[in-house]
Image (cartoon, rainbow, N blue to C red):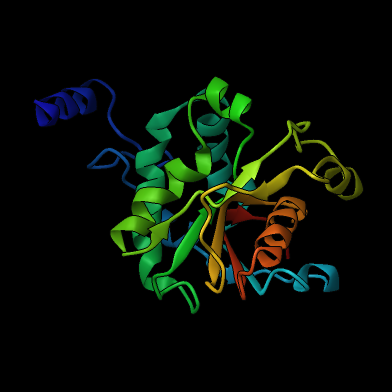
Length: 220
């Protein structure tokens, strides 16, 4: 039944490449030129303060390109029809992942405050990454909690973002990361304030190494 519905949906609303708009054969498909052009895994530069708690940070593509048009509708308007394109993107990224992102271990999403998650209905980092990582044998763990609500980070400068996140994160009650390296995942890496605040808590809790992976970043 699901296959019939997908076929009907594709007939009524032909799938298109999210980058150039060319027709695609399948829902969530990219054209052959746009996918490799968008998929640009890279190591992000870190400042001295960040390197105290973050061992490495990686992004799979640039934010202010095609990925922005996939992340924002999902994140703020609940557009789950963006997910198939992200899933295709991640499937292609698997062969290009560098160490230490290829050895299964503990992966932790950046948390939302419980009120925001209840209102939104999901944590976008989980929607983006959970199935992909668990299929590769990683242990998904909600090891962090956002213990107080914060202002939206969008539109704040680096100093305001850092101030906004002070005391916002804590180790979750059932977290088990003592002595285990952790991969922290989020949708976007902008100033790095969120990743840094989370990594600080993970290191305080005994994680010997914290690496960060985001879907997109414009940091050069």
